[in-house]
Amino acid sequence: MKLTAAFAGVLALAATAAFADMPDLSGREVTVVTENAYPPLQFLDSAGAAVGWEYDAMAEIAKRLNMTVKYENSSWDAMIPAVSEGQFDIGMTGITIRDDRKEKVDFSDAYMRSEMVMLVRGDEERFADGPSFAANADLLMAAQPGTTPFYVGVYEVLDGDEANPRIKLFETFGAGVEALKAGDVDLVLTDGTSGNGYVAASDGGLKIVGTPLGAEDFGFIFPKGSDLVAPVNAAIAELKADGTFDALNKKWFLDYKMGE
Image (cartoon, rainbow, N blue to C red):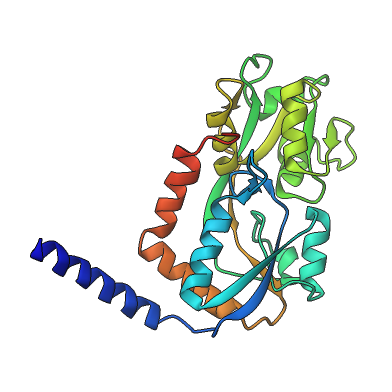
């Protein structure tokens, strides 16, 4: 018992020391905008509560930086312009770090790397990869305009025509998945983290086919020149190093069943 208590004390001191090395924002209120439409990163659960990997990660970041988080909601297409204009301090919704977006907003360091995968219905047998999907003109793809899955679908799966009628546009990612389940479209491209979460929760109703179409890194976004970038990066580095992100990956991508 004494050894256990002593060990616990060592852990507490280590945690205190680690927190002491973090920038202290003195309780500063920070407004974080999200979409709540990209499970398991952020979404509304069956009770209507906003939950997900990113919420848990942001809570840890806030705790370590001594900042207070206030959440707001926005559609995907309005989010980057709104953060760029300074309406919000941070944006989070599985945003791929891209050079064209860096012209409008600053990014944190990557907090997650994921590969693009092909999400289909569980009984799909008409195609098994990108080329076989593209070869069948009757097959349709769901996508949100302006997102990485949209551009990968246009330029890596189909013919490079952004107005291709085989791409059916939806306001949210979740709406595209519902269209897939209903048979209105035949393919949704998504990062592997979200895709695996949907498959795990589908009881065989969904599956992933083909090989990954490329990797993408996710980061939080900030208005250009934000003084929050460096503190958040320091917290991200610590959360990676101490295993917190690994624990969140297990919780949200292996253990959690969406919809329960």
